[in-house]
Length: 104
Image 1 (cartoon, helix red, strand yellow):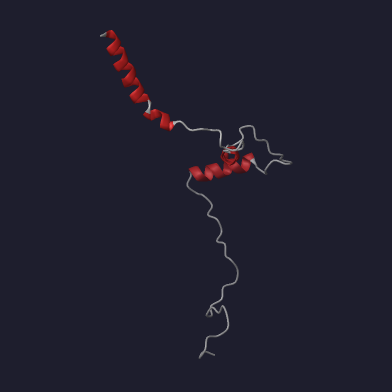
Image 2 (tube, one colour):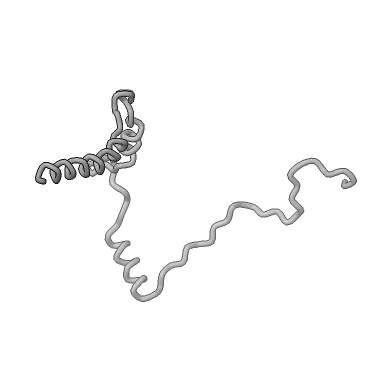
């Protein structure tokens, strides 16, 4: 009876593992550089933690000026930026090409 149980156990194990053989992929048919584009794209998107940029001069800053700005902010007296325009404005109708037929 022990032999029958062993045979049944082997048959059960083989029947459960046999379908898994279809999940195995053969790697022999792939090119040696398979996945290289993905690795390059991934490397291009990873930030370099030791990045160093050559800076000839430090940005202009003034501690006194920053302190005054902070005081104005605390007192709610922030200087509003001046209005900026894009140039002279035209008040006439816009024309983007030749006049349409029937119009002068």
